[in-house]
Amino acid sequence: MMAMLFSVSEVMMGLRNVLKHGDKALLRVSREVTNFDVRLHSLLDDLKETNDYNEGMGLAAPQVGILRRAVVVTDISGVEDVTIELVNPEIISLSEETEEVAEGCLSVPDVWALVRRAKYVKVKAQDRDGKPFELDVTDNFLARAIQHEIDHLNGQLFTKLAGRYLSEQEIEDVMFERERELAKRRKAAKATAGSRRVRSW
Ligand code: NI
Figure 1: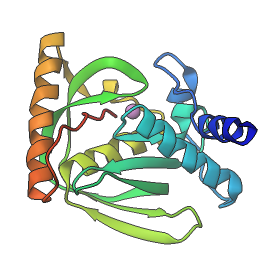
Figure 2: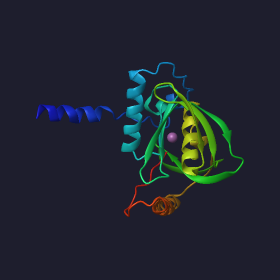
Figure 3: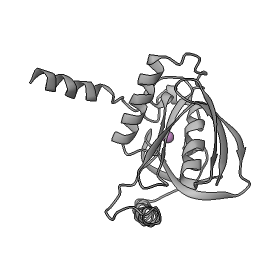
Figure 4: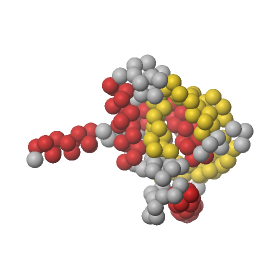
């Protein structure tokens, strides 16, 4: 019984509080990660857990009050959602092709706006052990998530790029459309049937 209680509290420990719009930490520039140690690993674990719990498309360390250049993003292009960890991420190139898509943020709840971003992106980063790698991202959801999270590291919220805010009805429509799009993708990825929750940034 005690062991069980202990494991429950351990699970809970991974969830961190997501700072909300108005908190000045969200407007600060995060510092480079230099120590690839157990503290970083637990930060990344907690970011993933908190992102999943909140059904996010991604979460940046400053959103949980840690001003370090570390983010997680959710790749929803396959059958299973995959979390990608990016430490000290840097955009190498952005596609000339852009698209304006409805976007939200876990730090700005219930607000969605049209944001124009590059459709594809090349990014370099380090993994949790400091090993460098590059990603050539051709999935537009993932490319958007990466741009959004790197903005967080530079103290910029998506509202700064917002073209137009969506009404409640439009948000519902967007959610509906996105569910359909995700269902289509999942079918393309030969996944089994069933509904999938829409994730937000
Ligand atoms: Ni965000």
